[in-house]
Amino acid sequence: MEEQPKTLRGLFTEAEAKRQEIELSWNSNSATFQENLSATIATYEECLKVADQVSLFSLNETLDDVSSRDLQYVLR
Image 1 (cartoon, rainbow, N blue to C red):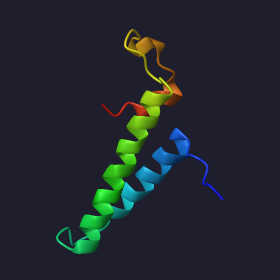
Image 2 (tube, one colour; image 1 turned 60 degrees about the vertical axis):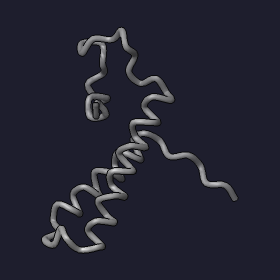
Image 3 (tube, helix red, strand yellow; image 1 turned 180 degrees about the vertical axis):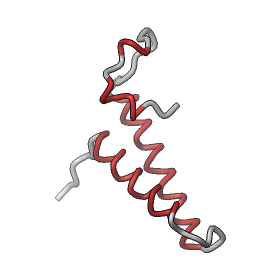
Image 4 (cartoon, rainbow, N blue to C red; image 1 turned 135 degrees about the vertical axis):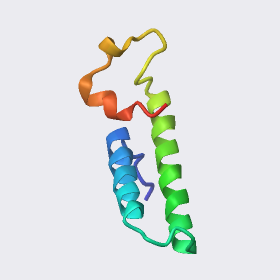
């Protein structure tokens, strides 16, 4: 059975949870920390891809045109 693609909201929530988890880690030199950091970055990068695919933000939009609930996805 093929896994359904994740929504932008789902990916962002996952990335934020991972970020919060690594912020609580005390040993940033450990292999586990580095793996978690890489996974978190990859999830944020996936958010960017999904936002681009769905054209969440167009080049001709101003900040006033962006929905306040979508501001959290402005990662660039």
